[in-house]
Image (cartoon, rainbow, N blue to C red; front, side):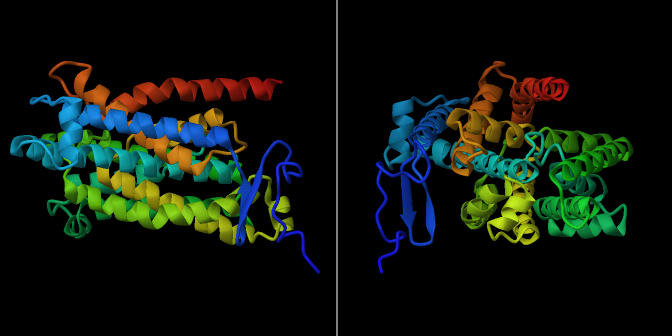
Length: 367
């Protein structure tokens, strides 16, 4: 007997009204032309902004020369400036933006709350607290600080993000994790971590406090290939896992009972997704500091542009990367010879959107 699963589906009998279905082995879905168009548009913006970013600086290089240098042409000075000095900075920004955006998309889908992002519920501040701890006390003031300093700033930030996420998850657990409880506990933990960072800054020496403050603003200055490699490895490992788990994520957004009805092991799936999200946010924060609002804004913009029921991971990744690179171009060029940390620009761009979200939720609560 021939089963209906082996029969090719057509537009005449769609499984989802208005959508053309597709199937590959055990995977299936529907075609979304709008999502593909948005993805291509975001990728075009990312490539153009990256080319502009590579050409700007004390030694300006035209877009044509930048592209030629990337493909192996250009004189030795252009190759050194583009490939050794500026390309690692742009790549670090794009990778960090993509990692933060995917992390935020996962958290917002799990919590079913657009305010759930790593920098709102305390994961990024956990990484920041550990990094500031290393900067301020790593000189040997305490044995613990010396131990953290021995493993380095990025590893300490990664450990801090994981520890804070574990604390949030444990405190939010009540026979499972509900989205609203995860957000509320995360906001409380975030407040505690912000207070701890402020206390560390008050007891630090002036040059240590200045160094920590620059890192806390999220900066791509002086990034090298040593910063690109760890983030690249994290994305190569974690983003495919997130894409695979996206099928489970689609079931979780309808609620725990519906997800269990679909055969999803809710707690196990949620734990796996949280680990992927925390890993991405912690690695991104370790590479460039806490770049604000990228994880909050990018998934929501991607969802609205694509008109999907939940933030699409692929579009969120490319949109987050483009947002950080465009912000870096603004930070480097908008104020003449004064270069701002990229985190200040993303905060200026993202703060109005956060106020918009809060106002919209208030209107919805009243209605």
